[in-house]
Length: 189
Image (cartoon, rainbow, N blue to C red; front, side, top):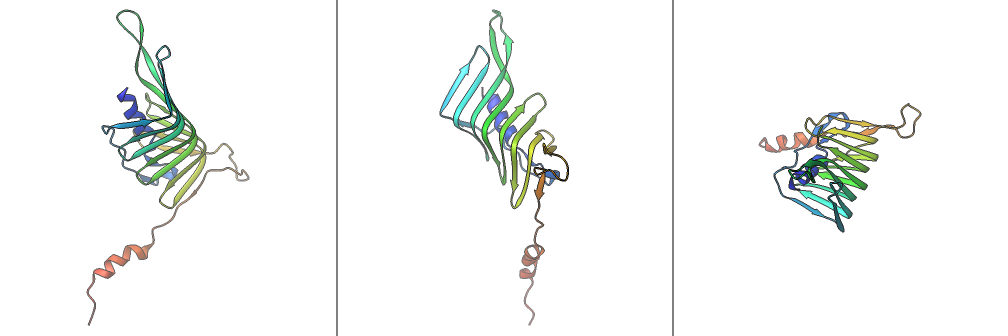
């Protein structure tokens, strides 16, 4: 079970700020311990499913995922006695105002899916991304967690649409970057 938890926690911590590839964040250390807490956990071995419900929180290194429900779908594998057993995780889904935090980045949405085979995380439903003062909004965020390639989309294209992708980026203040250099110069007499 440890393998899926580490990958799930790392994968859903959307590793780069998606709008326009503005910045890349340090990914969580996937070898760090994973702490999962929830109001309840149900394991359905006959379907190879693990379900965490009620105030689910997954912590790993500096990364955090919160949702009302997290479901892990594992692969079936045949055993020597022809009984079905559960193998590695194939997909993880999070529902109920999904909240994902990594370092200085925050992503929220209503539903998240991580697919292990293609290392793709998809966050849907009123997606909001925040990094520092920068904010981006859309309806669907797709991130390849291996390459950090990302795409933020809207369900309503066109200039007249009310819910288009929208992003606000703040430029760094040059006065702040010049201040240390000026302070380092000795005063003239």
